Image (cartoon, rainbow, N blue to C red; front, side, top):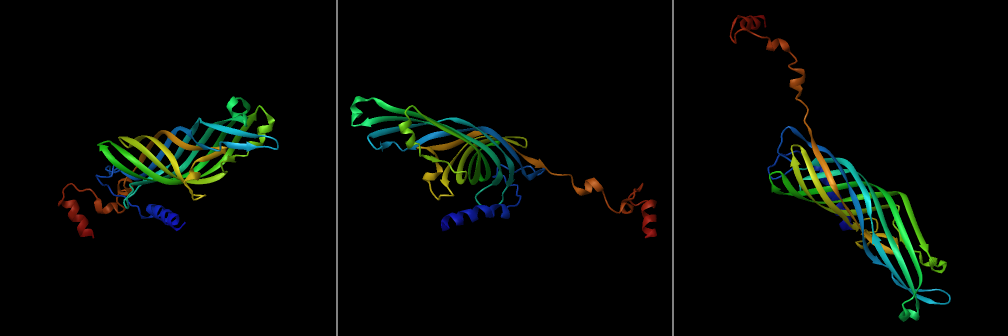
Length: 287
């Protein structure tokens, strides 16, 4: 727990210490006419990679059965929007924070064989489950980039998120009502948080960055567990993977104040026909 708190404080401290610095080795800098902050927007999808399941023996009041679960991943939708800032201190070169929408979808199939009649190979019960969950996430990511060419770089990112499930649709159907008792598997929590890893490749065009990426979670903050980073649904677990294309950009700097308002005391800058002519001398005598 102490280690996790130290890492969290270490990550949060970066935005406070960050300042603008145009460094050749930082691929996000190099244009003095742009600010050190901007916006990003991304669109893509999710996929739930099938993981472990709870296949095993199930016993009712009369018989014993061998239950085999087969979990299947499905595609879902993903969208994100937020802000990002260039950093000057520490191992990271930029930080971002924003909101994202994620849809996780998947399925599970159940096959039951009676014990001791396993050699006959006859199924005495089957079932199918489907889930579709919709989440809203708050995201925080720190980025480190390595230049590949003058206008492209590979980016490695690490960060955290907090998600809230606002829509959940789960169903499980059995051909034999006797096996409905086994549908006691887990369902992913309504509110959860994870540590995430993202790998991306960026191409810069003027002040725009085009970034295809892939991202996954590797640690559950709420449970302090690596295993809990996988999503539990029914009697199976799924590894969530996010992929998509992001566009991010830096804002232009505003015009300088002197260019907008001009000098406050215009009499000092009164035009003269000659730099040392009569008009200039007369103004000095008046003073």
